[in-house]
Image (cartoon, rainbow, N blue to C red):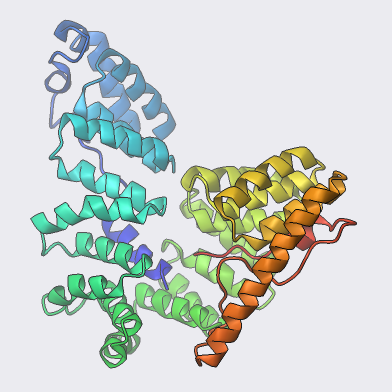
Length: 430
């Protein structure tokens, strides 16, 4: 129940804002005519330097982010302490989904101007997009304190708390805004779901039902579509998401959720097309990149899968799901030693990732390292036993939602090896 709110946040926040976006409003000489560390003022404000920065801003405004990045970096080589160039470089990098690099540039800009609210917000959004939720919340808290009535900031902070499982804090944050924002579907959705998760079910259902009664907007249909997906009602999800796309074919994440619903009814080709349509709207969206790579790996199209995985890992560096699919592709291409190295690093960072242990055991057996294969097989057996015990406990508590702790299928590898595509499981964690 996470993506529908993200749609709203994308719509209201848009893309990372430039710290300075209109050359006609502030002269280039004003932005460059000062001394910076290790550089004379005349060098920073020379005609050549002013021309570089002006060109960078023009390219940025024209959506030519790669070229703008190059020009910003040329200028910053002359004036590394220029706040505007540094902050705009971060925004251009974020436009390309290069959030890790953007975060570094925003931090450098904030060292120059620590109180700049726009760059703090851009930094929070970059952390949010890479699922660094604690870091995003840390940046958002002072922004919310400074402007407690700002719904957009409150929703972004609230969604961080919600994703971190702190439903009580989400309710405390958003409840004071309810009376002032009676028409906000996003507020109703996040507050309602938080109340339900916080065991205030009756109050939560009132807000969710309010969205359902007023479900004529694309955003409302999207929220309802994801709600159907959450309870595995793929038919209902398809109906709602179809309506959302009719009302707004360019709505962020609508094609992504629609593709997932189509997968639920076995429409692989249409699902892949939906994921491609999502990437046409935003090529940096993590989920469609990962799912397309996963499906291409299933079809043994390993080389075609790798660019999607590269993009997914650019957006979310260190994602276990994406790194696992890279390892699967390496297995499929016969690069067993490379796959072993990737899987060893993966299980070290994600020790309960069952499928990674299964694949690592298989690779070890295929490399004739039976001792390591047996060790990984024993780990798989232990993790599967823990998963089964967890599921049994949930059934005993009457709380069986078909979930399991991070891991997955209860199966084990064979010393004879298993075809790589049989080792894969649908990516999770969205």
